[in-house]
Image (cartoon, rainbow, N blue to C red; front, side, top):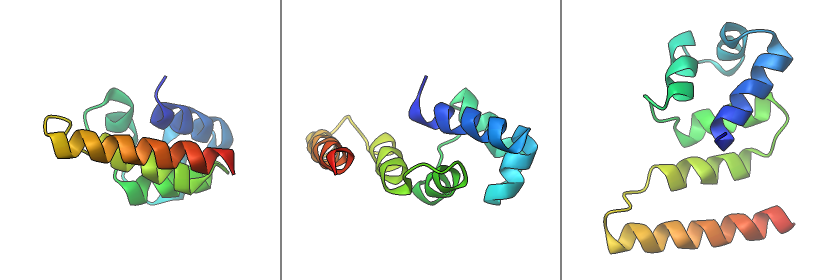
Length: 94
């Protein structure tokens, strides 16, 4: 299960429904279902709000969202992804 879906499921458990979770983080209900299905990109600010709402580290969640949004087809994108993954692993060790 992706990091995003883990956050969503944790949010559902805490708030009682996907709708209540959506309301808590200030997004339309449809965003939650589209994120779960992989049909909509969850922006870094939304990912941070979601992580904060479920008492997880918003920094890690934001970096994960940025990594997901990088174009991996280009050499620059691959280098950026690698650099962010290294940074994320260092943050997790703190």
